[in-house]
Each structure stands twice: as C-alpha cells, then as structure tokens.
Amino acid sequence: MLFIGPHVSISGSVANALDRAKELGATGFAIFTKNQRQWKSPELKEEDIVLFKDKMNSYGYSNSCILPHAGYLINLATPDEELRIKSLNLFLEEARRITSLGLDIINIHPGSYKEGSIEDGIKRSAMMIDEVLSQFPNIKIAIENTAGAGTILGSSFKELSMILDNIKASDRVGFTLDTAHLFGAGYDVKNEPDKVLDQFFSYFGSEKLFGMHLNDSKVPLASNKDRHDSIGKGLIGLDAFLTIVKRKEVQNIPLILETPDESLWKAEISTLLGRI
Image (cartoon, rainbow, N blue to C red; front, side):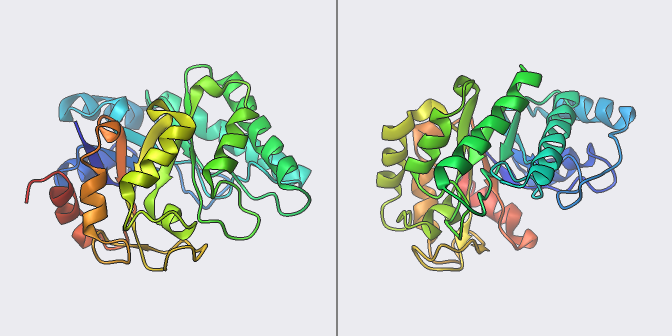
C-alpha cells in the first residue's frame, strides 16, 4: 500500500493531526511533536496522547504510515560542546515524545560539522545517534539526505554510508530520501528517478529506505540548495514522482509531502495515489 500525505500541523493538540490527515484523504503523514524551532515546549497532555492513539485506531492509521520529524535546532555533528549537549537533550526529548504516542521512528537531519574535518563530523553525528538509540531501545532513526550546502552532512550516498558505518546500532538506522534534496545534491531524479533509487539500493538495500519526502524543486540540479515546490510545479516534474510511487520498494513506507502550497495537498495526494 502507498502511504502518502503531508506534514500536518499539531496546532491545538497532537491528536488534531490525525483529523487533518484524514480530511485530506492522506494514507500516511508526518508530524512534529513540538514546535520545531524552539528548545522548550509544553509536555504532551495525557488526554491528548490517549486521543491520538484512539484516532489512530479509528481512522486506520498505523506506525508504518507515520513519520515524526525531529526539530530543526538539533545538530548531531556540531563541534560545540554546549550545543552538543542541548542537541542531545532535545533529541532525547523528541524520542520520549514519539514513544509516548506509541510511535517508533523519528526522522533527523545528520547535522553540520561547522569546522574541522568531515570525518570528525560524521563520528560526532553517529555517536549522538547511538546515544539516543541506547536510551530508547524500541525506536528507529531515519537519517534524511541533504542538498549539500556548506558543511552540512549527508548530501551523497557515500556520506550517508560513512555515517551508517560509524553507528554501532546500525540495524535500527535507515534513511529518508528527500527528492528535492537529491536533486539539489546532483542526483537527477527528474530524468533518471529509477537510476537514482537503484543507486541508493546498491549502497544500502531496500530495507534501509525508511521513508521519502516527495518534494518538487524550485532550484536546478546540483544547486546545493533546498527550495521545495509543489508536485509537478517545479523543475523535477510530475512524471518523476509517478515513476517513484510505482516502485515496489516504496510500498508500506511513509511518503511525505513537504510541498509549500497546502491548498494543493489534497490534489497531490489524489494524483500520486492514482485517484485522478
């Protein structure tokens, strides 16, 4: 089954995310469990946790179709000790929140090493992932690929492989492939979507694809920039996405729209699911 839907808001209550996803006709979706741009947020209320789980059951959603996203302030690869501690504590909080909701996976950016060698940044990123996995033995982590700006890790399959090789609990780690990030990093998902996916699978195998972010791109191939566009409105184009969703390897994993025009989400979902 295809699990397709957008990154829905939790405004008012984390349980409201399920109503919003259902109203859009989404078969999958993503959430932040807190404000993604703040270090501190209120605790999840017990009544909201119970309601979230109840709505999951009543609407027919499962762990397999939901991809929680960690906050943007976390930097796994930072050389700054103060920021490392803050990032680790926030990552642990994010893991605790998804666990309380009955979810078992969290999407995270691999971080920026800022200075020094890329190898040291990779080791720091892997070490923090291992710290979180050791404290939360029932979760998995999906590392998201990046577009390649500056000292941000994870823009190539080689770098993602290097990160994975440094993680002790690598059996619980996989990847989220963002199509706009792939395009920005120089992977031609517009003209060769099958070739790009096959290249990823040759590195990792299909079992390491934990999810995808389906985003068109406002910026050209190999721009090293991250500028999302609506499906079929950008430089990647609709045909590439229709090719991707036909792949057997993307069945039963979350395929998340992070596209900018919310008014198009329902149509994007319907198009990718083959409803129209």
